[in-house]
Amino acid sequence: MEIQEKLLKYKYHIIFTLTITLLLALLVYLAPRFLTVLAYFWPLFLSTALFLGAVVFFGKTSLPGTDSPGDKAGEGLLDYVAGQPEQVVESYKSE
Image (cartoon, rainbow, N blue to C red; front, side):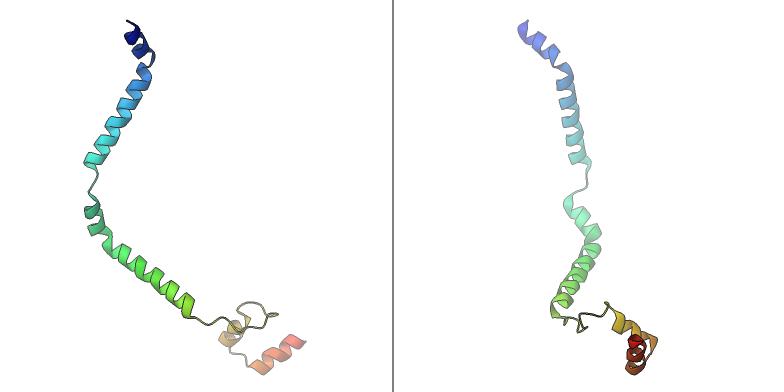
């Protein structure tokens, strides 16, 4: 009798644990296999790996910027794109 009373005391815990276990077993059984997922997504994985490899490669091989410390970042590039010669830009900055 004592064992049945203890089991009844914890019946909700036991039911919850069995339900979670059953759901996890069902999920493992019904889930696609790893190789199936890999076969479907391999182009995405490959392109992402190549892109990250290119980012690392260019990050290590690029020369650091030669801007002077007082200039704002990218100001020289904006002047070049705007097509203003260096002399005009410098005389404009001094005013």
